[in-house]
Image (cartoon, rainbow, N blue to C red; front, side, top):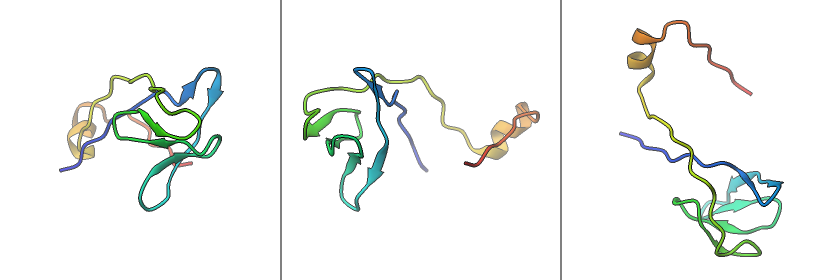
Length: 75
């Protein structure tokens, strides 16, 4: 089963965009490397931490039973 963590991607007034380079999670704006706990482990933002967001992981079929009016968007 999968799991996820969720963080606010704004840090110090800057909106960050993240990519996975095959090995690391890296933000496009500074090239900083991030870990799964929302901490910058390398680069310009090393030592900074993203604010966590309370989130719930759920299977779609289980969610849809109780929230059938949910709309799903795809960018």
